[in-house]
Length: 459
Image (cartoon, rainbow, N blue to C red; front, side, top):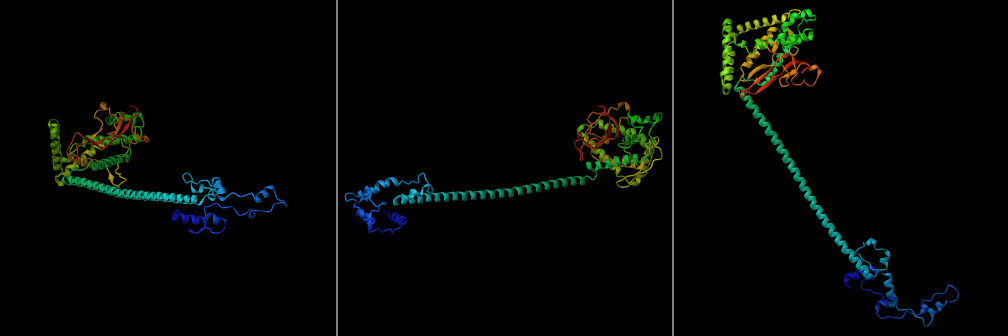
């Protein structure tokens, strides 16, 4: 038996490792391997429960009765009461207390050794699992650090991209400003949109500040037949005050597009009126000849010549042009006043514009129209009015187009009418621009301000 086994056996039996019982029955049993007789039976005799002895008692105390040896008794009893203990399929808590109490010291030693071995295995597995968990924790920490690093890099790239975009936009603005500064006459679309929308409001506000005479009776409608050139549907509007507002606003815009815009009134300063009339036809023929005979690839050159000529004419001294320009304004105002006077109940009054409190008269309307015409003629792009009333009512066949038109008030409806609906009245025409501000691509059209119209419910 090994030293370790002797140590465990001593712990189980409660005796020192090298100590064995020396006296008594068990001492002689462990000391010698020879079989000995059990002491006399008188030592095992016990009093009977009665005053006499039973037959079995007498037999046990007789001289011829003997107790079997210790070897004869212990071997069979060991085989019956000491079951083998195994840890292959049972854990320690599954081993009953009875099994442990009937186990030999060697079996208990084997059990303890097996438990120690299994404990070492379990401890080794736990150590490996802990090492594996620590390794996975380190990998997770590395992954989190990598994610944080990538997030910082992505944020840096986003900031760099935003900075680059801001620099690009700034460069574009600087180039645009540089291009504008190189051509002080060049103006953008936003300028013209703001100018013409303000002028529209000025005209409409003046009309609504006057007192007009509606044709409430059928007999009075004969004096309104001249409005047929404004719209063939004039009879639907002459009977109400709001209808007269719409008709006369459209009438003023018809006069401006025919007699002011595109007529170069602003360039007549210093030239005799008779000479202007005499040479007007020649000028019109010359312009038409240019449009018809200049090839398409030279159209940019023609518009360049037009814009430069207008700039030179507008650069003349104000002292030289002011008197002639004022004469033209007076003459055009008189013509417009005579045309509108037949529909007025009283003399025309000046109107105040709510935004700035500025007063407006017919002369102010004519002067503003001449100024806007001069500015547009000095641009390399070509400006013109679209959706104007035809000169003959028989040619009235205008249809609604969402690209060029908007409906006045729209009857409170949010959606626009469908394309192709009949137009009854053009309150104000559309301002269109052909070509870019730099004088390129004249085949392209851009709508600066949409026309304001009234439509019919019938398609």
